[in-house]
Length: 430
Ligand code: JFZ
Image (cartoon, rainbow, N blue to C red; front, side):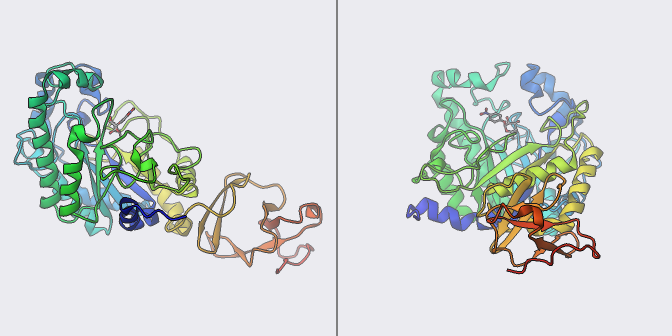
């Protein structure tokens, strides 16, 4: 059954590259890199605008080298990247004409978004920008002056709708700046809606109409209307104009992937931190291992999803060395195994007990997450496997029917541990 809803049809066209590329880099960077206690520090510690000002006056990332970031992403096998052009604290990494609260007015003195898009494009990566709908700095945003938890904003909004309208003009204006001043962008990543602060509260139809007219190929996350994997009309067969092109589960890989109410797969991207923070956090050394990252990437693809893996550069502009080390290891794996990621999707067979499958056309990729004892069973694949090879070195592995598998007539078996001189039965060439 196909869906004839125009929004779904257009989404399929726009997200084609996204569903092939599968792996991207998320970058959370801003003034909060200086206190180095995560990007929510202003809210969590109830820091006033005035007390946050020194970080603006000091922001001078002398080692920011967007080309180095781009090389790290490319070498990790990432195909796109999303940078926080503005996070909740309202600080802009770009030279907006609509505010003074921007990197060009700090000691940095540069448009850091421009350097980012240019460097990543030069490495052949697609570029996206994260833009916070919430703004703890703008005086017409309801949180202004409160110290500061934005989950309480809606109360204030009800009290003062006129000034909130001015914020919306600012917010739409900045999105227009980003879409007109930085060439072709590939992703806009809005963050985030909550309670009644969603959809048309952001004048979302108007905003989306502008986005579609300025950059028709750009894809947008679902957070103008929803948060993460919770709700939103992207999960129906008739998504709204601002439902977004992909769902954005955060810090979780959905157990069954994500489908709409008719059971059709929808594009989704899990965003995941490398340690336990998005923004740089000096004391957070709880890094995931490279093998965990690889397995989580495989898991996403095996459920038709993408992985957007986060790094939080420090106050000097460097991606932490621990993150670079993990990315390099992931990249080494991708060098020989990326054919099982790019262009791949959920397999036609259910998850095997020893790992996961990904699939691209008639190629089935078997990702072994554990060592095998004896032959590896490919459930239900008897007679369906023409040849099996190792991705890492291209060598053929035996598809066998050893003596101890006779009671599993519907399964094919692969043996990785068969010495050349072994007196095993000859490979089963069905
Ligand atoms: C948001 C941001 O607040 C966070 O700083 C980071 O940028 C992340 C990628 O996105 O985090 C959220 C957004 C929504 C919810 C929780 C965390 N939510 O709706 O529960």
